[in-house]
Image 1 (tube, rainbow, N blue to C red):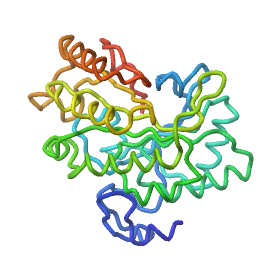
Image 2: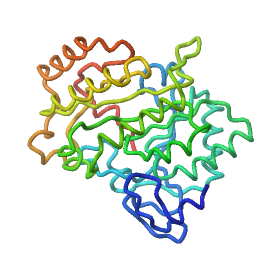
Image 3: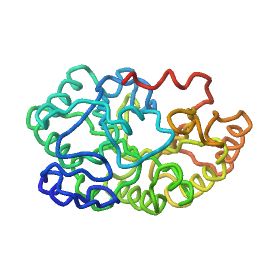
Image 4: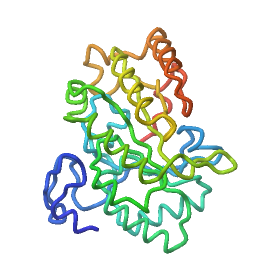
Length: 294
């Protein structure tokens, strides 16, 4: 699998750089794995965190350039430490020993092939937890197919409906078409969500959408597509935790939190669509407190 890094096409940018020779493409990654933090995380969806927490691994760097990224210190500024495939496998096992419900790979796209090798290694040593692929949604269908048999739960974002927004805020052309095709492949691969007796997800897809201030129509388009194309095949997680950070503080739309009016507008629209399976985050006041201390 690591041979794929010689001509890297892991994400939709398909930079085709030789990462094994130290070349760096759009995602700013070479052949080394880089992470900043791993921990038991209790602020994911209830079916992921449960009582025990989700065994999260936060990977450094990203193939997107979101100006409002809450994890920008690691995703955009590259904070973190290099580890080996063997060390990543050991982290999986450590999370399992610590009682985690699952292994939660946060922003894993750039390290897909190293992760596959680490999963193989950890499973040979007794790893049995479900593996969650927690992604920004900007994924190649071919890469998702390579993950077949290694990933149990896909947790993709579906950020944008319009190309104008995806380019402006994340430098991600054709985001909607790329992300929706990847999501359909994820559903095709793992099937409808399945849960254990404690309500913890074991298999399936949960699609996240973060509502952006000043762009309520974008969210309505996304929700409408989900109703018409996904419906009961996956869960939907509508997130209201946006707060201005990083470069978003300079944007005329994103330099504030959601208003109560915007939140109620989306809530009302969601109910008219009658999307049955999923979660809607309450509008809070201290969203910053839930960002891990990188």
